[in-house]
Length: 404
Image: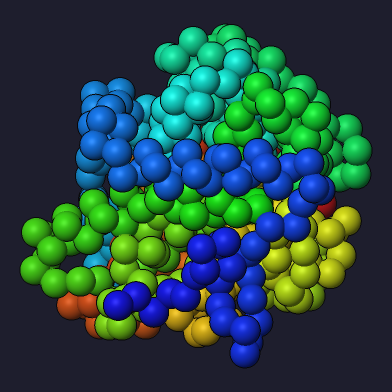
C-alpha cells in the first residue's frame, strides 16, 4: 500500500493536516476538467491506448534511454557513484516528450480541434509542437516575452514545427505569465481546445496525469540500476520547477524507504537576496493557477538562471512530499548551476540543460560526503544546446567582472 494519500478529486493529504492540489477554478472550467479527468481515467487503462503510447515512446522518442555511470565525474569527486538518467537523449532533447506524446494521444481521442500549451525554457513548447506536427493538430504556444528573448533557438524550432508562439507580456513576462495566458485561452475555448500542460501543476487532473506519463523515468531507472548494481540507489535527485522530471523519477521510488529523495530548487541570486524560485524552501501553502501548493511570498522576485525553473509555485505532490517528510528540498544558486554545467561538459562530454545542472550541482556537493559503494541517480532532464548562447554571455560577463 502506497504511503501517498490522494483523493479521487486530486487532493493530497488528509483532513487533519495540510492539503495540496484540488481544483480552484472558475465555474465554467469545472465541466471541461471533469471531462478531461473522465477521459484520462478511461484511456490510461485502455490496452489500445497503451500500445500506441508505448509504440511512440520507443520508435519516436527513443526510449528506453540509458542510465549512464558518470565514471570520470565520480572519480574526480571521490565519493558515491553517480548515475545519470539520460532524458537529454530523448527526441526533442528533454523529458518533456514523454508527457506530450501521452497527452496528445489523449487529445486525439477527445476529438479536439486545437492544442495549446505554456512553456518556460521552450522544451515543453518544442515537444508539444513536435507531437502536434506528428498528429496534424493545430498548436499555439504561450511563452513569456523574457523567455522568448533568452530562448530564441527554441522559439524558432517551435515555429519550424508549425506552432504559433504567442508572447506573454504582463508581469515578469516569464513562465507564470505564460501559464496565465494559456489558462485564459482554455477558459474561453475549452469546447474545442485541449490544454497540454507541461508540468505536475494546475488543477486536477493535470498533476496526476503528467505524473502518470512521466513516471516512465523512474520505472526505467529502477529496473536499470537493479540490473547494473543489484540494488536500489541510496539517493535520487532532480531539479524542481513545476517538478515533472523530478516527479517522474521520484514516484516509482516513493515507497522504497531506503532511497533518499532530494529535489533541487533554483536558489537564483541567493535565498538571502529574495531573488530566486524556491517556494518549497521559502514559501507558504497558497492557491496559484487553480491548485494549492507552496507558493513564494513575493512572486515578483521569482528568478532562475534556468527559464524552465522560473515559477513561483510547485507541483502539489511535491508540496505533499515536503509536508510529510518523504522528500527533502534544497537550493542551488545560479553560479553553482553554471559551474555544474561546465563541470559535466568538460568531465563527461555531456552538455546539460541549465535546469538539469541544478541537480548535477547538488550531486557534486553530496557525493564526496558519501561512501564509494553508495549510489546517486541524477535525472538529467534535458540537454544544454538551448542554453549555450546564454551561458556564453554569462561567462563573458563573469570574465569582465573578474577584470574590473
